Length: 293
Picture 1 (tube, rainbow, N blue to C red):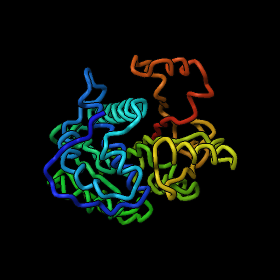
Picture 2: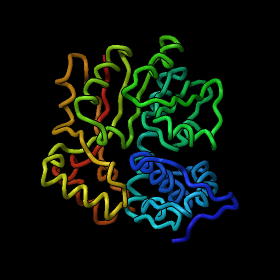
Picture 3: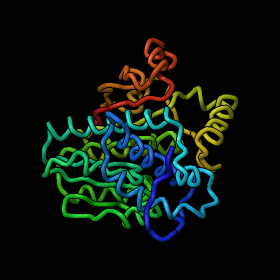
Picture 4: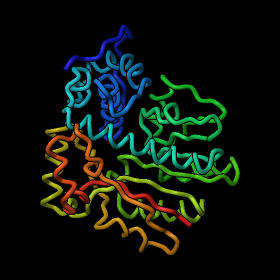
């Protein structure tokens, strides 16, 4: 696989191991966008990764060096692209029902979702850690409908910025985020969203809580370190046993639907499509979509 090229001077981004995962996702978007018949077309990812790649040349991070060399497992690229496409579909379906609504992209990383789904009237917020937003602002410009919020998702000040736009329908997207967060904090966050944004929607990715047992967590940690080259501080902490588990947290939380990669039956999944017939594999890592009323 060829590495990306650019004439930009070498600058190494100062990102934590957790924040580095946003670049992995972004590079998957760029690689897939340049493949024949791409699952996801993300022109901004192609453009911006071309500018970022030289910054990674001198990095001591295994993950960032693999991105510099363009060494990403093809199956991971497919999975990330299928997931991004699905979350784009959630966003488009929401703004089709609420053209003047708001979308909050939690743990946005370098994602260009606003540019992929903008209908010309929605209000869109990218939310991530200050270090990530600081880096992202080198490549994206805000405008009156697109805003970047430099906060931890647990620093609820960001909610005030969203509420300042008035009572509009809101959808929260948390793609590849919640599994890295502490379970009690995720629950508190969801309940806060329900309280402050009644009638909102939440689509978030989760892992099965069986992966959080000591033995299974050790296996998963080895997979993340060796296969994906994610750093030591990136680990899974939150999971569900069933898609309806979150409904038990509070009256008014309602499961609308759930989804897993394998259910797409996309030919690029190859033999992994067989997993769509297994409930065990379908609910290993998947997305849940709720109404928070």
